[in-house]
Structure formats: C-alpha cells, structure tokens
Length: 285
Image 1 (cartoon, rainbow, N blue to C red):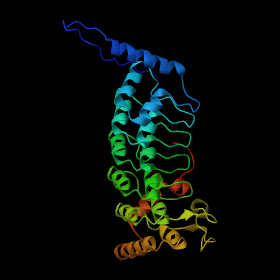
Image 2: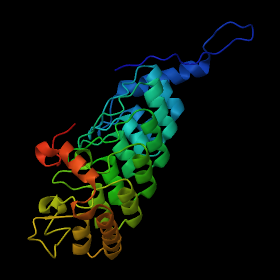
Image 3: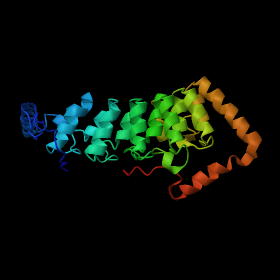
Image 4: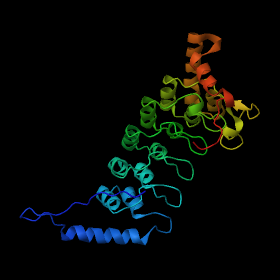
C-alpha cells in the first residue's frame, strides 16, 4: 500500500508558496533511499527509521510513497520494529499517518503487540491497545502477548493487558497443549504476575500436557509420567517454591469458597473451548 501525504512547503516573505531548497534536498535523498530498495535482510528505509524512532523521516518516507506494511526477511513490518524498540510516537505515526495494519503477523505469527509485550515496552503496548490491537492475538505456537509477558515476569505489561481485557483463562488464553499464562508465570517464579493472573480469574485447576510443558527438557519432571500438570504441579516439579506456596494458598481459598467443584468461572471457560478441550489447535489466527 502506498500512502501519499503532502510534505511541508516553504513560504516566501511575500506570502507566496514556494518549496524551498531544504524540501527538495530531502525529497531527493528520500527518493534515492527508496530507489535502492531493501537491504540484504529485507529492511527498508522505513524499517530503519522505525527502529530509530525518527518520526520526521517516517512521515517523509510515507509522503513519497513508502509501503508502510512492507516486511523484512523475518516478516516484520516497520510497526513491529517501532513497537519492540519502544517508540510510541512512531507507532502512532505509522498507524495514524500511514494506516499501518496493526494486527499483521511476522514469520513466527507475532504481532506488534507481541513485540511490545516481549520487550517490556509499556507505553508502546498501551498505545497499540488504544489504537485497536488484538489483545488475544496468538502466534504460531499459540502464545498471546499476555502469555509472553507472564513468562518473562513483566508485571506492568501483565497488568496493562489484563486491565484492557486480555483473556487470563479459557480457550483464548491457551498455547498449544493447554499451556496457560498461569503455567508460564509459575514455571519462572513470577509470583507478582501469578497473583495478578489469579486475581483476574485464571484457572487453578487447568492442566497442560507434558509435551506443552517440555518434559525431559525444561521440566525435567519429578512426575514426568503424570501426562499433564496444573500450574501448581509444574511449580513443584521445577522447584519454584514461591510460586508453589502462592498457588497452594489460592487453591485452599478457592476450595473454601466454592467447595470441591471449584470456581464456576472455570467451567464456563472450559465450555467455551469444549470442541477441542479448550486447547489451542496450532493454527494461525
């Protein structure tokens, strides 16, 4: 897609419009950049400007026809780079001026929101959400931005996504094999993220398959033959005592409140994904 935006023009002292030498110098330089085409990694001048957060160059490139959604060799757009490098004003320029496609996915299925969540860029993430990014977009492994943030222990990102309505439980939240944001936080000892997820209604009883838990590699598995594990069981298997203690307390509290049948919200979330057991099917949205 090509976007045409008028470059600024100079003004003569008598009030007549006249594009000055600076304008033409800039235009010649930008025309030359565009004529060179992508570099060896497929990156264009717009990619480089987005990575640097240079909004003036971004808008100038858009004005002379740069393709805002062109991808590099990894399938990344300029918007994805602006998101991962933490340039909210560049994100705004690319979307509002260039009409960038906010939910495009790269070769791994990640969106700009995934990139912001992974990089712990709160301001950029908030900007993307405000401009309509899909909060529950899943990559090729089924990971949502919330799951990535939970895995990394990025509490502020987790809170921002939950506040914006990202799914903490149920089919929308699950990675392939049923791996959930709660599993991700438990496995990495991210107790603050765990508490936020629990407060948001994440299922304490949901189990992920051994394959999703990486049994024999990351999990090692004191109970590798179990076949599946809840977040609590995973935390215990990995020796994450802080996570395990928090999840035990939460489980006791849930039992005292709801009895042996557990939180009714769990059943509702499971029902929403009953066609495939509530697990992600591995496709790309």
